[in-house]
Image (cartoon, rainbow, N blue to C red; front, side, top):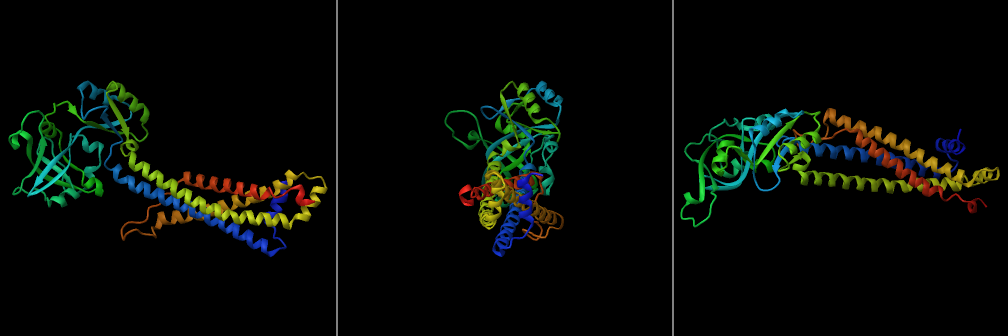
Length: 399
């Protein structure tokens, strides 16, 4: 057996004659266990909050979205549509048009996005599954589906034929405008549904038929502002993107969900890193107890170390004893803390003991990635703390 490891295990599992050293070592062990448990639980909570936050955008955003590289629109030919259908991994696609316009209802105005969608939209998007009231719009009609926030701001109900819900879209062209008819394309819409996803999305879109949007914007039938694509869960995303770019000859760009919500993903990742660093700092502070315990152990075992040195042991081997002792203490403490943290996370997942509201449990996600991150963090920091403490062993100390 490795000599330093054998001595380190003896020191680790045997009590010292000095009760103060036992107390400090116990405090260091508890600090490692509690710090590990807290870091894992917090990372699991933030993983849950991340998934909870992204669930709203995932219900709305497609797996992939094709946008023009420049300008607001691009042309899609029948051949290009057929090529998209043939791509392995593509489940469905939908042509869309988005434009910021003015809505008017019963003396109230709202500037927001009109989004024209085709009949395949419900196959690529889950908005229709999040209707608060009413039904999804029908093709080739003036029906629209509005967000819950928009309906509240305008006091807009469904199937209100007494007060028209109107949309105003600026006309193309130049010259002096002498009347409203010359300035805007106008149409009366029929609200048939209200969707409810999140506060931001509820105030952003009014959905209508694609052909109506093309008519209002004076677009051609094959002119769109985007194509939304649903892919298979096991589809090769990078390969699909590469094939789409080939189909459109580099005139479009394809964005996945992370790229469509780059700001949101960046914010969530930043928060996760910040929390990790804060709790890592707490663990570092707790490991000062480990350094203190090891230094006191070195001083307590000074006579034993001197004997081993006189018997031919190298100083490096004597240092390695306390390096291994501290590292082993960190490993065992990390494992025990992880077990406690995993139990807490699984209990919350199963029984939902802690609630944000009466109906919404605090979201947590158990992930092996968090297990690995926490374990490596505690072992590396424990190793560094032990390295600092073991450096006190020197020939001068033993003289």
